[in-house]
Amino acid sequence: MLIKTITEDHEINAYYNLLTKAITEEAQFFRVTPTDIEGEVFPSQDTFESFTLGAFSENGELLGTVGFKRDSFIKLKHRGLVFRMYVSEKAKGLGLGRKLLQALIERAKQGEGLRQIYLTLIATNQRAKNLYLSEGFELFSLEKEAIKMAENEYVDEASMVKYLFATKTPSL
Image 1 (cartoon, rainbow, N blue to C red):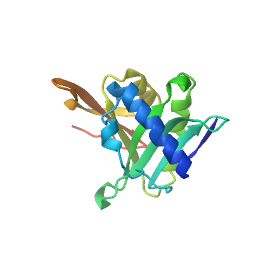
Image 2: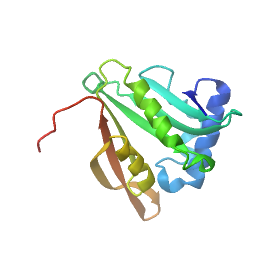
Image 3: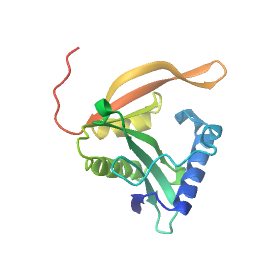
């Protein structure tokens, strides 16, 4: 298994093929639809500020992805977003999601001044939530009916954060 930054055109094509398959076959775990990503510009570069990792099999098949984008506003540059984490059905249960997430965290930490990474997920996605909790993420909000899945069908969205360095516990 090889985890590397997706940069080549054929890797970007494989990324969109995998993502389209994921959001079509497992729509209950995504906030986007295939229509939403049609014609989209690849959502990251190859920098500490923005990157997408891919997990490739020995024969070069893309089995999983995860993206990172640092906030660009001056007062928010200490934060970065984890997005579009997905592992293909055939690779689930092999620890690939954990390896991708750990690789993302290690690379993101190299960006100067980054203190936290955050993500959102469909609140009922317990498998993903368990992975994030086991890697040190904390739940910090739950937005009720945040995503409209179908007519009269809404789901909640959870937000999680991982502090990269010891931080003072906020008082409410």
